[in-house]
Length: 145
Image (cartoon, rainbow, N blue to C red; front, side, top):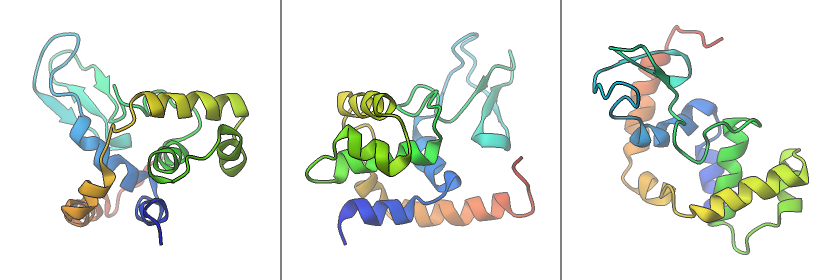
């Protein structure tokens, strides 16, 4: 089984897709330069304790303001980075039920910042399984609406 299929199986839910993005979270508030945050439950957001500005986990990443869903974007990222040869934008559009223009633009965004995340090394460290256990404990009994 090739790498992209393994990664797609591993990151098959939105919650699992958020976990690697936690390394890229905002450390200081852009508005007030505060370094203390509340962590909110919904969508893994952080809120500044001083000015209450909310930051999503996808803030300032490739996945910021993606309108077709984080899971689709994550899978497209995996396909573009880890598949050989790279899929064409028309293939991506058909696979993920997107327009050609949307698939092309996101593919160009991924190519521009090609090695944004090293998912293979992330999996090798076995960090994901520990975080998954913590996430399950955290999410147990809570509904995300």
